[in-house]
Length: 115
Length: 116
Image: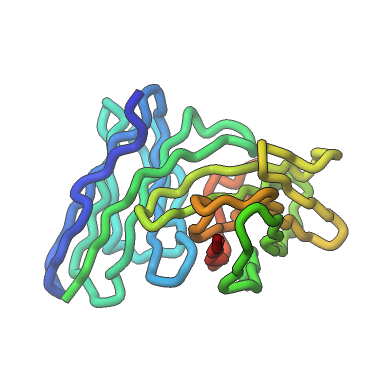
């Protein structure tokens, strides 16, 4: 049973460029959340997608956008990259946005470096 | 304001010993959930243990137990019989409220090093 897979694993971009990160959820999961983890920090919630719609959003600018496809996979897009966008981007999937104890399964992340 | 506080940036423990990682939280909700995740150098966040705010007993999962003190708003992770493979970053996280949207709020983490 494949877990959460993310691609690419590493990426180097130049300031001002745009980037797309991809995530395939764990088999059977229909909800995908994205987190940004800066060096030495805990993950910060960006947004969550369910039924191809953004359900909740954290405190991130509009440069961060996403999409969920009918097969539940998801993309995170970041426009006009800043040096401060350099981080590990984690995708987490879960089975329906259920109760308080809904476990989120994480991928290994995409390490984005902006130069 | 920080909702999850982990005051120990780094911890050392000898193999086979027990270690406690501290976590305090801040919420005005009555319904919330507390999680601990392990993050090895590979980057993946691995779920360890969950405690619900209404759970009367402390959660346990194998060598992991959660020391839940609701009045003090603390949810410390206890790892018994530490193993070399336990060396990693450990994050405490909270999910709040009925309509929270299921986002997890993470602390800054504690780096644990298990020595032979």
